[in-house]
Image 1 (cartoon, rainbow, N blue to C red):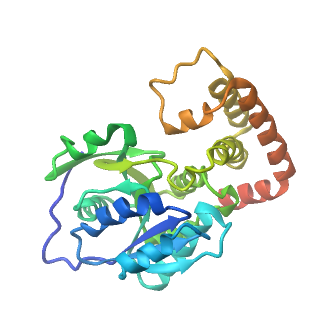
Image 2 (cartoon, rainbow, N blue to C red):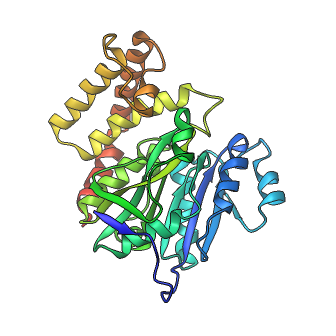
Length: 309
């Protein structure tokens, strides 16, 4: 479908909260927050939730972006925990929409207006996302052929997790992000719960440039470990027996199949293929063991998720 990008000037602009989880994100905050500062929407607040940074991130934000609210998450709660802290703050301050905004992205100045128009055109739209442009294709973001007068949308089951906007109603209905994921996979779990509750997810052709793993650039092992571990946890929490088995087979194929080509695959595939097949196999075995040790809380979470409507 095609969506008009011009908000009705007689409408009251609904309040939007932009939640930015941050941990040692100093190399990326300079360009990301400068991009956000150019946002044209007239009624938005920015909340940066810091998870124990020691790299000067907070000093930079305080000295250069004094309108941003900073919340201290006391460290080691991960991406999901930081997002939840920001969401609670946003809901307490009356936000109608909440954007989850990674600290290593660039956005168009019109990104909020364009997105809110999508919400205005449909019922039971819970979440609107963007088209991710990876860091290697930066020129595609700046030279995008996407018209700023119209955007094309399609309903999906999941989308890129670097930026999306949710209606506040969704969090009142299905709750927050599952913090047991810590980082990676919590968004797909949230998308699944959202669609199970009868909301739709809309992907748009609005581009967002994403560096990728901006908070993990000094520790590449952790994202790979969490990608394997959490993929299995997602399956145990949301899939049938065959779905769980297929997830395990898929991880073995992506991590250990030396004949599998990488060219047509996205960032998550590259994360899973960061090491050689032997190390990847060890990570998969470790993921199975970790999930077995956590099976009782995972099954309790599965039961709770399946009762949400």
